Image 1 (cartoon, rainbow, N blue to C red):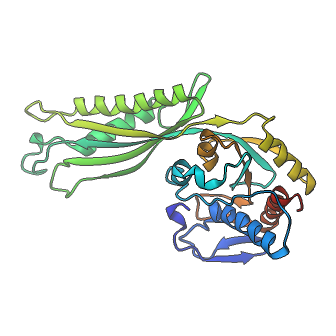
Image 2: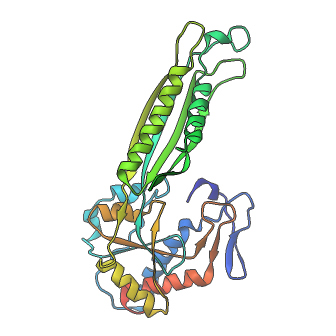
Image 3: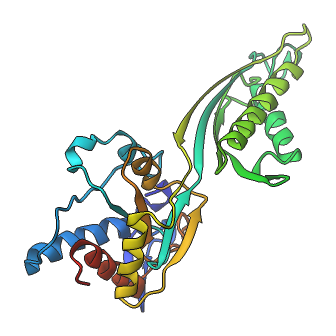
Length: 306
C-alpha cells in the first residue's frame, strides 16, 4: 500500500469497507488483490476443486516501482503461459496496457553562508530548486503534460533541504517521476526536467559569481506495454467474466501495474479489478459486491467453476 494507508482500521458501512481512522486510507489497493488471490487458493483446497497447474504469486513493493515483479526468480513460477493480475477498479475492467515510468533523484548543491550577515556570499539550493520547479510548471512540463498529440505526466513528489532559517541552504534533494505511454516522449519529459534544473543552477550566483550545481540520477521503473485483444490471457479473462454474468470492458492505465514487468519478462498478464474506489486517498473504499464478483471471477479463471 501507499504510506497514507498506515494505521488503517477497516470497518464495514453497508456495502462498503472504509477506514475508521480519518487520518489513514484503507489500503484496499492492493490488499483487496491479495485477498482475491488468497481466497482462490483457499477455496480450491477447502472444496477439493480440480484445476490445471496453478501458481499463486504475491509480488512485493508494487507501489515503489514494481520491484517484486521486476526481480522475481521466474524459475520459481513454474513457467506459466497465462497470467491474471488483480489490482484496482471494477472487476469487469480488463487492463490491457499501462504507462511506463521513470524515477529521478535530483541533488542541488549550493553554498552556505550566514543568512543575516552575509547572504550575498551564499548560493541557495532552495532557490535553485524553486526556480526549476516554477519553470517546469510555467512551461507545461509539470503535472498533466500535453504537447500536440503527445501526452504524459511529471511530478515533483518529494523535496528535502535546508538546516536553519539563518543559513543559506546548502543542499536540496528532490525525488521526481515522469510517465508516458510513449517511451520517446517520456525521455523528452526527463530531458526537460534535467534542463530546468541545470538552467536554474547556472542562473543563481553569489556576489563572487559562483553558481550552484545539480546532479541527477534516474532509472526506468517499468516500460509501457499494450496487450492485443487476441492475446490468450485476454480472451480467457473475457470468457470468465461472461461466465459470471459480467460484460468485459477494455482499459489502458496511466499507472504502473505488476503486469508491466511480468509481461515484459515473457508472461503476458491481463489485470482485473477488485472493487477499490478512490485509491491513494484517505477516502478510499472497497465495494463489497464488486470484491465478491472478483473472487468468483478468479475462481472461474483458476478452475472453470465460479
